Amino acid sequence: MGGYLARPADTWPRLFPEGSIFTRFPYLLPNVVAAAFIVFAILLGMAFLKETNAHARSPLFAQLNLPDERTRLVDPSPEASIVNVADQAKPKER
Image (cartoon, rainbow, N blue to C red; front, top):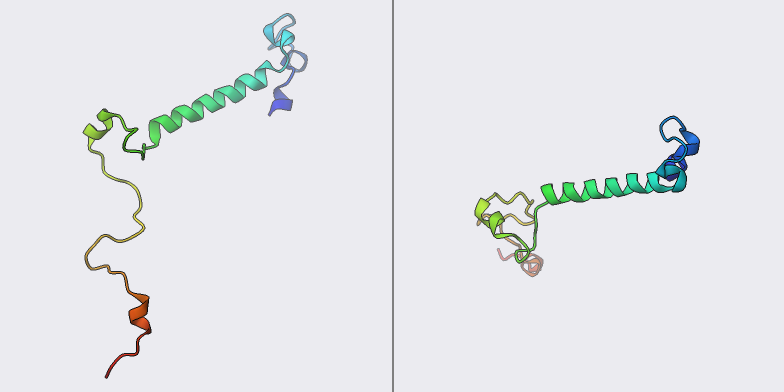
């Protein structure tokens, strides 16, 4: 991307005329595009990612009472039980 956007006054003289800021700073355009992409990614993260640290959550977030959308690694139901490997190794009595 940087090589394609570098020196826009030389590459696209109609869009970036001689004497513009891009003539004086030929690598400004790729840096501005990269910075805009980073800012956009940060804003998306702030808007759509849930804060997992309870101490860093805002009080407003706690009042929203949103459901937990994380996938559970262990089934919390009482029917699900953890089997002891040592009990399985014992021979069964008849």
